Length: 74
Image (tube, rainbow, N blue to C red; front, side, top):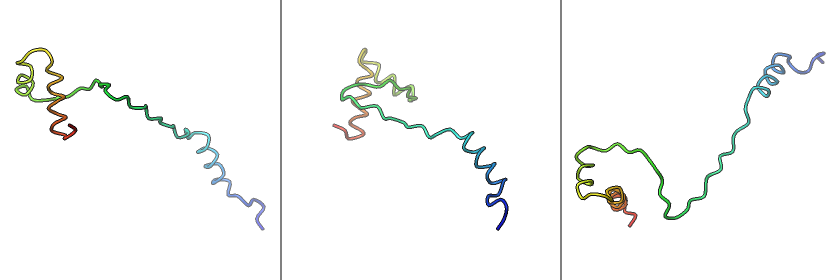
């Protein structure tokens, strides 16, 4: 039987790893509230944006409605 049953290098590497490794972060998903809008950045073609803006205020709502229809969420 060996005097040292554990390889010292393996033991040192395991100790280093446990001392330097961050524990896995728990990511809690926020509850979704129906009807709440989320702010995003979206890159679209200038002519598409102009088409939605030509009828004045409410263009973001019109884009949202078009996206809902395209995604078949209505």
